[in-house]
Image 1 (spheres, rainbow, N blue to C red):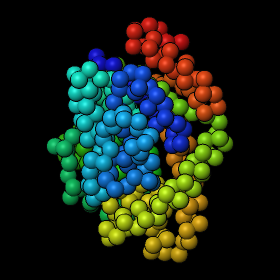
Image 2 (spheres, rainbow, N blue to C red):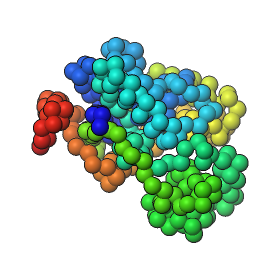
Image 3 (cartoon, helix red, strand yellow):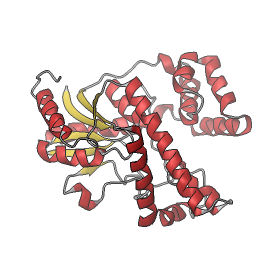
Length: 309
């Protein structure tokens, strides 16, 4: 089993800065576990690590696909496993950093996601059209009628995963909930960051203000000029909120407030996911930076197979 350090948590909680500190201590390389940072050209809205912030630490799975391409949890797991193996072989240490809970859980738990051989673009398009015409609830009921376990786990708001579960059943005849998990070849230590709720929300609001100053609107305009609001990348927070600015009646201040609200809601969902779906170790490095020393101690104990408090 290959040891892998994983840092998770909501947006704006300090994951990047901690990962750089630990990468320096561990001779590490960072693997992004963020579903939006894979897209080329979208730097500001996805809060990609800058050259200055990275301080020379190598980062992977950033800027790897075009904005019109689909990138799934299965793609992430395949890429991450290859990178983990390669990084270890080169005498370095892999550190996965990200807030996309389903990606991290899929890797850690070996979830069977249905690889490319299960892909059926025509069926996915049919289901998207069905959802657009009949609503998300009707789509979810369709899944519930064949796979109640998956329907209850996924929930009706996650249209993409509902369609994926339907697609796997359509192509294999086996319910998504009955797919056997894959063997896991990693031994992870998962650091989960959190802080006081209001402090986190204030940090999120401030981050959005900085994004606007850095040129987020130009980035969103570039994406919009692709001429297709159904692009996978256009569904991300920080971009989708601009649709009604470019094509509707929202003003820029409304867009800013909407991004802040969506980001806060997303942070809440992220925290719920990490609390309920995964075994993690919680730390707060914002209210007390001395906690970083505790993290370092716990990580080194884990690396040396000593009990972590």
